[in-house]
Image: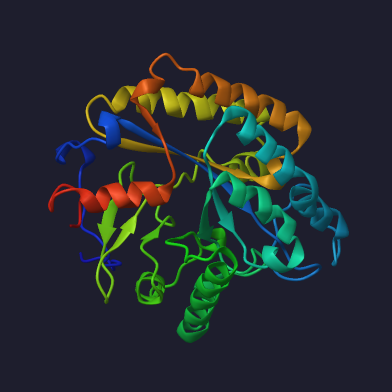
Length: 299
């Protein structure tokens, strides 16, 4: 029986791959993502914390908007307190709706990753030309606002079409974070050459855990710490990537932020933190590109 396939990569068992190291001989790469999103009022898709009410459902819209008015600011304060580099998955409507958010991000030197125009829409269900137009528009908007183009892409809702990877490569993106199938980077095929997949967590992600599975803040931070501890142990054998994904209206809430601080302090004060490369996806991409051919799957 021959099943349909995407044709983007071949199967690769993680235990059979060549060994390499992260910069400075580090063994575990840790990256922290903060999703900064904005939604249409009364239309399109949205995250829901409380049961939906009839449109325009101002209650859930306001809960999401708390992330931009309050939550993102508190989380940036926490990252500053911890001296923690992060990267931001950014809806470009943020530049119009609340551009003040970008000022401290620029001062921190954090990386900006394309995350669509708004999370009120899914790009993967669009016609190819419409999806192309959005990918180009997002890249051009960030370039115009930041003075340099984003290199990475994470689609709203991880939404992708059969052509998305091709369109990303053709639009000038270098890596993608929509395929959560590995703990190491690997190269994926496109019709215009390879694009790198960098691990992004589907499970150590506050949105599905807290909004869909109703985990408590402490449940989530315990999972976050357990993930880090286990991957740190596994990384003695081969280099791995440990990602943590956060959203401003979720962990920007005071009662959750307090627990998140404890979790990050545990990680950053770990007795073996010297083995950890606290980094951003763009730096992971640069290092992978410096490795000899054949080391990273899909080369």
